[in-house]
Image 1 (cartoon, one colour):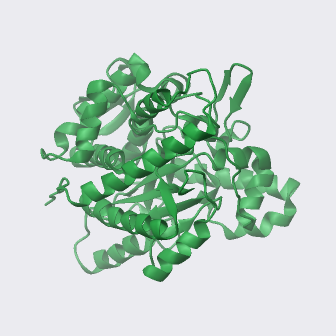
Image 2 (cartoon, rainbow, N blue to C red):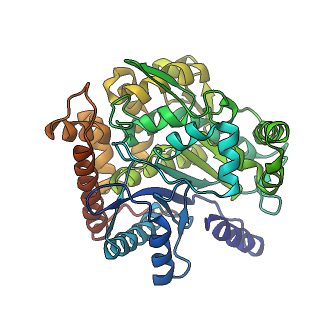
Length: 462
């Protein structure tokens, strides 16, 4: 990723001039590769080589399998700029994929296929700790979108790549409030972005990625789906609220030490790999403080660009409102009945136990089919939307559409599958899975072209 270089440059500039206020965002997006017939392709290395030859330094990264590529963006002050650059890189990837008789899929594959995992030591180490079969199954079917937002000024040491130990600092308190607000927004965000209603041809949830990649356990018929981190919750559970910046640092260290202890006792031949990695590399849940000095929110499905832009604007302007108004995110029972209510300087959100045990499972399994989840999404949007510039934008139109109709991308994909002949209790056929994948690939191409010709929201900041 190239986020660190850009943030570092800005940090150097800040020493020479008045410290800037950071509102920067960045994207990480994972695309599955398809052959022209709709079957999953394992030619990721070939496509990445073509892209680097076409444009040296092109922001594309490998993923766990040879079936997926990751396209990143530089951290930008404006969501417009982040999406504009990201859209152009995606467009180039689409063009190069076509030249190689490949296509990009903006979400997980719905049918059965045999993934092609990589043999890098880091991946092999994680396989042995978590379980090879579980990891291949979950990682290969969990395409995600990650959103980055730079931390408040003065809270992160770029030399040590970790949070500073601050005692008296307004920005320290701001960081804590922003961190807790992202956790509170998680159930709304995964609902807006859900696009994975199938796992290996079966419909288990509206957000199957969170189901198979998290800590949940669901039984449907004779099949039991258990999340990748069910037996190692410390590495994948939704993080708790924090009340001190030291707690965030201790959490990272605890996750690292526990992983290291497992490797040392059970897989000592991988100790050199653990010792070379940054401690943040040993947590794979919904939110972490990255080694690049950003909040990295990792809870969302990958999706079409309009969903990505709309959800990114919601996230950014939530954090911006908290920063500008110096709101204190306050877990309370009030946050259950009136989520995201502002009273004075307090922003009321639900207690953590309610989020983890009640709201998140409903968001993952039922999505907008749950009235409780729909209310939560609406309250979250009502807190953020008035602060977003009033201008027609395809990303915001998508958010408004979901709120009005209650239909997410998962709902749309289920309806498409039904029209092609799938029965809700039956297994999706290979032919229908391929047809759905090709249709989504065409929709991606159309949206990228349309968005690059459209006027997106300009985030005009003083």
